[in-house]
Amino acid sequence: MQPDWGTGGRHEVKVGKKVKFTTKGGFGSRDGEGVVELMKSTTRGRFFGVREDGKKTLTYVRERQLKEI
Image 1: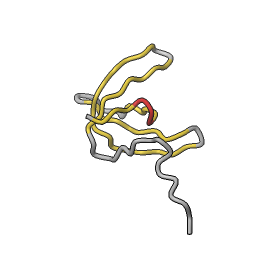
Image 2: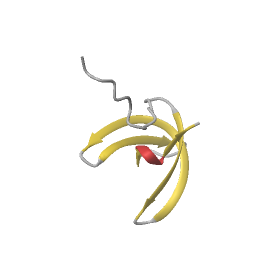
Image 3: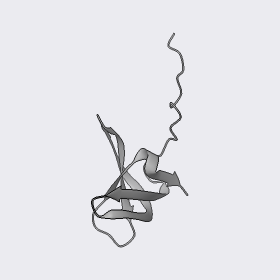
């Protein structure tokens, strides 16, 4: 029987949930909110595509930068 390791301290964000985020990058940092539409797992961690109101493209945010509303 496998031990239950849980989520390793991560909070589970699901597609369709409304979230707030803070992102930092080459253009400085900014806050926003929107709905999670996509989840990608990479070797660098889990990323979520967030659709902000009034924007066509998704904003990709690391899991630790998200907070459910």
